Structures are given as structure tokens and as C-alpha cells.
Amino acid sequence: MSIELPSPAQPLKIGTRGSPLAVAQAEETRRRIATAFDLPDDAFEICPISTSGDRIQDRPLKEVGGKGLFTREIEQAMITGEIDIAVHSMKDMPVLQPSGLVLDCYLPREDFRDAFVSTAYAGLADIPAGTRVGTSSLRRRAQVLVARPDLEVVEFRGNVQTRLRKLADNVAGATFLAMAGLNRLDMAHVARGPLMPEEMLPAIAQGAIGVERRADDRRAAALLEAIHDPATAEQLAAERAFLARLDGSCETPIAGLAEVTGGTLRLRGEILRPDGSERLCDDRSAPVADGAELGRAMAAEMLTLAGPGFFDWRG
Image (cartoon, rainbow, N blue to C red):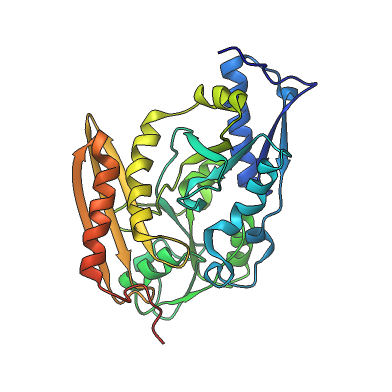
């Protein structure tokens, strides 16, 4: 299929959140397309868009709308034609896209692990009882309370730079960030170290970048096909099927990780009570082609074991 390539006169408009990390991810997407089609930098325009999730900093996400807060305005701009494609952190993406939009391009996955960040302590086990630990993630909150119920977990909203500033201001003694984000910002040095999945199973799709487009945009489809990473797609098919069956959102502590070796996919999944009082885990393998079905089956069994009200907040 012949397509009209982006040019300085008609640049490809790439929508993104405005944080330094989000812009870095958009730049990575631009570089990959430019390399694949030998295009100049000015054949693209990075379009930062303010989202509700970025503007609302004084309340937990569960109180104001969950994951869609980081995508709604960007997707609306794509629907109206203000931008051509949208670059997202896949861990922020709802499992369903608005009508007319397609999410079928993933860049090669970065480090999926969480990072332990502190100016005072070497690791979670070294933190004194009663110390404040900051996170805006219900998953990380519950996982911390499972491992260290003697710590106080406090709300810690904001981009990477904001959270590091809060840490310097002693709002908390430690926090957690995604290693992928730190790597993309050339800030891996701020982490005391990565946490292995056995210590803290990551968020669904953590470390992966997805690129969304209009379903009827053939030019965008052709450009994105050239940079799509099938290996990442295999992992995310299993993880997001697991999430979808659990009806996961920012209101539910869910973790999961798929890894592929040869033709076999291993999926580890975890659900937790928000207060950290209970955790259910599973670990299964299947042929790669059956990854999505594996995710759904694992989630269905976990829901049966959990019973009604597992994700409810307790007073």
C-alpha cells in the first residue's frame, strides 16, 4: 500500500501528556518512525496535552475517575483530528478504547521492575517501623502493607520530578518509581535498586509504550506497523486479558507479569485487598498463542477464590 509520508509541510502530529517522561516517550516514538522511513525531525510535531490526571494532584485517582484521567483529553484530540497518533504508558491505559480508536502498536518493552527510591534507606526491609512511605498506586500501597504492615503509607501524586522533590522535602522516607521511566529519563541513578518480581510484582504492562491511532487512518496504521514489537504484544495480550477479566482500574490493587521463553509464556498474577490484609497469587504457563486465554482463566479462578467484596475498602 502506498502512503503519503509525513513531511515538514504536513507533519505527523504526536499527542502525549506533558510530563518530561511522557514527552521522552513521544520522542522515542518519533525517532523510531523517522528511522524506519528515513524522515527528518521536522516531519513530526510533538503535541503535549494537559490531562485531568495531571491537573488533579490533591486527591487519589480512585476518587476522581481512575486510569481514564490520563487518556481522555488525548483521545478526544485524536477523535477530532487535532493529533494523528497518541503515545501512552500502557500501565495507564484502560482495557477498552473509545469507538473509532485502535491500540495495536507497542514499542519494545523497557525494564518492567519497580525501583526503590530513598535518600535514607537501602531497601524496604531497612525502613524503621512507623516511617512514612509515599505512593499514589493502590497496588504498591497494598504490596507494601503486606510486606511491612508497620509502615505508614501516604499519598504521593505527581510526575517523577515532583515525587523526587517531595522525597527531598521529607514528605516520606521512601517511594517507588518504575525503572523504565527512570531509564528513559537517564535517571536510573536515583534508584537504590530495582525490585525483583518476587519482591514486588509490577503493574500490568509496566515498562511498555503503546501508540494509539484512529481506526480509519491508513497512513498512521502503516507507519506504526513498521515500529510495532510483536514480542511485547505477546506479553501484553496475556497481562491485559488478566486485567480485563478482573475489571482492573486504579481502584483495584492488581499486579501481573508475562514473560516469554521460546514458545512458552509464563504469567504471574496477583490481587490484593486495598489494606494489604490479604493477597492471592498464581503462576502458570501456556503456549504463547494461548496467552490471552491463560490470563482470563487465571483471573476467573482468582475471582472465585477471592469472593465478593475482596477489593472493597475496609473502614
